[in-house]
Amino acid sequence: MSGRTCDIAVVGGGLSGGLIALALARHRPELSVRLVEAGPAIGGKHRWSWFKTDLTPEGAVLMSGFRKAAWNNGYAVHFPRLKRDLDASYLSLTSEDFAAALTRELADGTIMLNREVARVEGGAVHLANGESVTARSVIDCRGFSPTQALRGGWQVFMGRHVRTPAPHGIVKPVIMDACVDQVAPAGNGGAYRFVYVLPLGAHDVFVEDTYYADRPDLDRSMLSGRIDQYCRERGLEGDPQGFETGVLPVITGGNFSAFQAEHRVQGVAIAGGRGGFVHPLTSYTLPVAVDVALAVAQDADLPGEQLAAKLEAQARRHWNAMGFYRALGRMLFTGAAPEERYRVFQRFYGLPEPLIERFYAGQSHFSDRARVLIGKPPIPVWRGAHALFSKSPPLLAPQSKELP
Ligand SMILES: Cc1cc2nc3c(=O)[nH]c(=O)nc-3n(C[C@H](O)[C@H](O)[C@H](O)COP(=O)(O)OP(=O)(O)OC[C@H]3O[C@@H](n4cnc5c(N)ncnc54)[C@H](O)[C@@H]3O)c2cc1C
Image 1 (cartoon, rainbow, N blue to C red):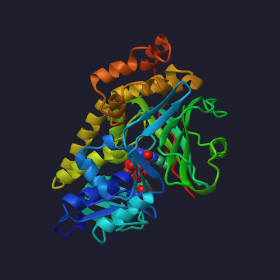
Image 2 (image 1 turned 120 degrees about the vertical axis):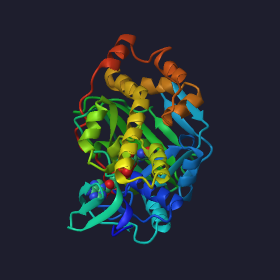
Image 3 (image 1 turned 90 degrees about the horizontal axis):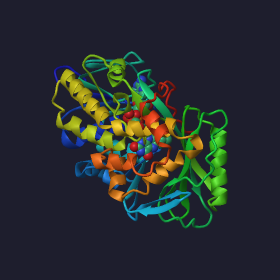
Image 4 (image 1 turned 90 degrees about the vertical axis):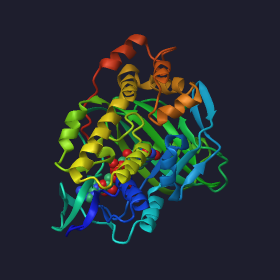
């Protein structure tokens, strides 16, 4: 290691950084790694969910060591004119369980908590407290940051874990219940709203109210009130066990080269949301973070410069592959009136299940794309065509991620 602190320094112990450290520990245990996190815990405080079909077999093995909730009896979606049960298995992992597994699996001394990074450069990470970590390769996973270069809207949500006094009787996740009021929150330009329901146990249920909005305003009391109302109407009242909020970018376009240039530091590789490794429409990153972690482990011997170039090229390929989902996002935000946006999803969920699985995995075939865009469009053709070429505002507001 020639006087360096470690072989690989990973900056940011969130989803992407944590998975990279895990993949290195599994596939290259002889390498010394540091996972440098500003916060008091790895992974923040929320839950990540995904479909079993989102992951490759290698990806599923990487995720196998985590304690997680799994529903092998499929999931449901509810729309005013469509109620459907689908077969794909669904999984969900809390950041507490993420942190516990990493603490167990990573070599002693790998995880460095409460260390805010002030600056990164090729071969070194400089902490706010004046210390430095030197490394052959540095990987920056500090999360998505606001940008002029990308355009779009926002997915805004609050989730609450409720313990009900009597068994709630829900047997499978309801990924989207759009049979709720679609009126936009006061002052926000418009929204597609749905509720997400995860039965965590006979008495435990997670209820999340989400809207796709033009602006990133997180109205906590409005969201909390909506969850109260939903729980009241569905007999899900009980003791709150915790909650999470999120404001995630929905990317509908922009200049990806300019986005990469904004974050590029000579010799530093970038992964996670900061590197653009997101599903532009669902805002989810777990499947792509798993792939990137495995790719890093495979090329862990590359010098920092080469690893940086490799991940930049992988991010550009990902951007190019995601063009269809950005176009759908434009249709959602600019093609449909806010109270009509649910129709885009209602029609989508009426399509064949393999197509839906490929959509979530970000692997839609050409024929899937045609099927989603043509046929009986849920919004007027002229508006849809206009939307495909229109521009959304820049993604300038900060991503919000808070819990008590
Ligand atoms: C409430 C919520 C629910 C979500 N649910 C899902 C889901 O179900 N499925 C899914 O795929 N995605 C989900 N997402 C999105 C997903 O969490 C993010 O896309 C993902 O966490 C991005 O991973 P990342 O590693 O790039 O960033 P993050 O996970 O945000 O990690 C970045 C890390 O870097 C650290 N950091 C930042 N600055 C510094 C610094 N200067 N020094 C040191 N450390 C620093 C942060 O503290 C943080 O731990 C959800 C997001 C939220 C907020």
